[in-house]
Image (cartoon, rainbow, N blue to C red; front, side, top):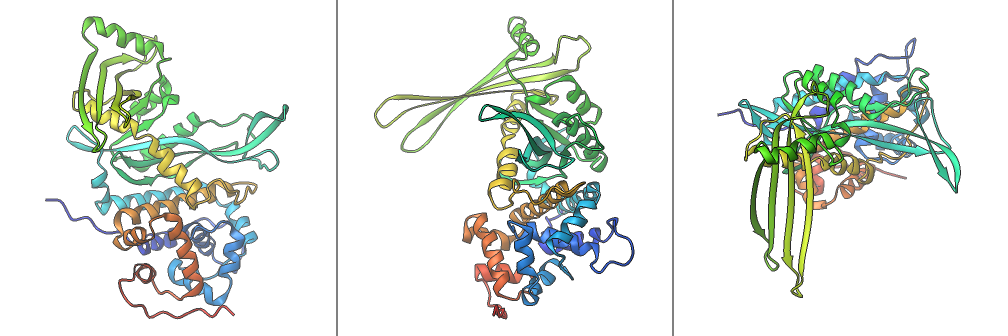
Length: 458
């Protein structure tokens, strides 16, 4: 019998951050007035509390009485001004954040939390689904920095140049769970005076090298869209001992020609079943699978051979007026996972769960309080990506709490929406003195009486 899952509290995460931030390389010389870890912890607090801007955070937290909660909850000794914070964060090497993501991920592994998120078992070893995709998080035709990507477009029929920042992000997900656990994002940006735009595939190459170096024993199934259904990314995955599920389009004539040829010699197989759903309106769902092993990616006879799985879902029913209704969905994937009638169902579930990187990650960060698309600052070097790293750390901790912290689950159940939780967090830290996160969560759910002191805001 395995060990019982160990709960991870937010205090443990912040203690880890405090310890690791103390080891960051300080770009300043001499003896600074404010320790570097205070800049970093203050920055983390901005994203953990979901402040919409650095200035609003500074205005709230420089008050001596309100600052009490920042000390107790985030271990901050002094709060820098928003301008000073930007100056220092801009100079920090963004790669220093990788070790924090790695250690936090390792803590979650040791807690046995990930056991609930096992995707598939191959060679009697648990494998976990890692979704990856690129996303833009800032666009402007007026504001730019040296690291910005450049895009030519039109506005009012006039050609203009737009500037923006992109990232390649990945997260451990499971088709049946809402929580996602992000890895350190990889920036897609221009660097070192290079006039040629960086791209998502180059960022993926950097990501996969870092991922395998930092997690050499993690058995992963990398889940990607059709952009990566080409030979270089697939060879890279094979070389780094990563299984994969990659979407493929019908425009890939080489793959589909082999699958269609397999209909004649029997190497292409089929599997289907149906079931009913609904109560008042009964719907019949038909699942049809077509699959084949050892398919070449392109016409080169030396190209890697992969497995192919195609899936159709047809849902049919009669509406309240007796009219026939039908809804169709179609997906196709390339994978290295051995195919069977059991595994193809799991493969399709995993491939269809790729939207979790779009919805549960990017959409949450953009539209549910984290302000991913807000320009917190461009800077001259690493400011933008360092803010994104902090945002992802705050998001990571929130996902851990959603999965592991019972009190946080009770808070979510009571307030129902994350936006309400973030608003309550800011409001209460302005009004009351708290000594711990348990005390704050306890106040919201009302499970015990608190000895609290009201902050005099006069």
